[in-house]
Image (cartoon, rainbow, N blue to C red):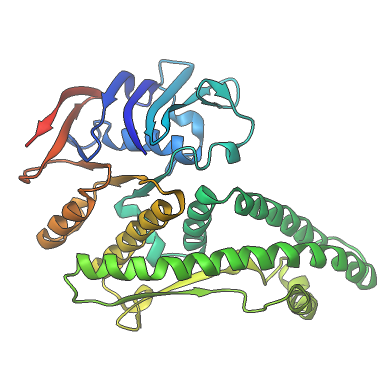
Length: 361
């Protein structure tokens, strides 16, 4: 699976743009604030239906327009397809697959797989468990619609349970109501935990190998799922019932998959607490490269790899090893300058315009 072409209309600083991509390494080069990241964002929108940076989707519409459009052309083993997204200031965005509008984001997931990484992804290692849960959720959802539905269902139940914890009702009535929510919550929680446990177990060896490659074998990376340990629905219900007084005092549910985490270690030392920023950055990149391997194995096709301004954050040895690692995967990588003697397609951008699009032998 690979992108052959991207078309943009009134998308951020692109009034009208068409760019073709090669199957290997595509280097998107230009000075800062010229629109390099905007191209990656547009492609990523067609992977998961949302941006990796825009808090409000209407922000992507050019100031001089009322609508914006993205369209990607995808080549697959069994044919070709298109994904098109139309943004409007007056209504919700429209997503079309092969020209046919879809009703739910879940219908988009898996149509076109991709993995995104930028220096901001350092938060995957450094910041809150929420970022690591999001990493698991996006990746698993790309390969399992069942998981996407489970997660949506769980969040609805959790919201209702938390609402009851804040309601002004007697303890006896609350306990009766909690029996209903605990039953439903535990069923979803157990299944979500199993998905995540299996994901981390599968991810671990790939992340270990990628990290060993990037560090030239000097560091040993290990990851571990930190979450629900209970093996049955009743065991989860028991914990929820035991925690009721605590949850009442807090005003929210203190136990469940919404509290899960991933522990990342280098040479058996917690990298979040004790790792250098360089180690944390390489760990985050290793997890993303491992994600690439998982998607390829599950779908039997290579996802596209989107790397935003990564080279500036790595030393020369790790830059070279990363480029070598990516040469067999369609990769879109942005940078301010690129002087490596490597086979690639070089795309130079200035003020939202493609001014050069040629092979670099």
